[in-house]
Image (cartoon, rainbow, N blue to C red; front, side, top):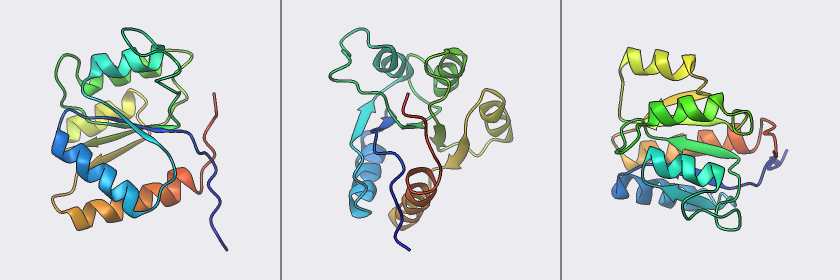
Length: 149
């Protein structure tokens, strides 16, 4: 059976580390994921993007089908942004995958308590990242149904 892409909306990467983002984008391309990837560098930009304010008009900031969220970002942390997303009626149904360097049990617990949909610790090698991106593709893009709005 050939997998069917159940949602073709963009992927929004919220991460302040340029190298991590470059590797994530490279891994997405390697798996020929057709979804466009957008990037914001901190929690404030993430919320601005999602609510279309401060330089993020709807034409340049389409609603993501999936958010990859780093917890450790400047200005507004990933936890603060997650709390806002999951408390906002128009945003709470966007799946948020915590994708961070943290392995803290407290961060894991808090992320799920606040409504995070998955928690993944960033791998140390590119090969492991490629495997994780393949799993994300198979599960989040080819298997589950994600709301379009």
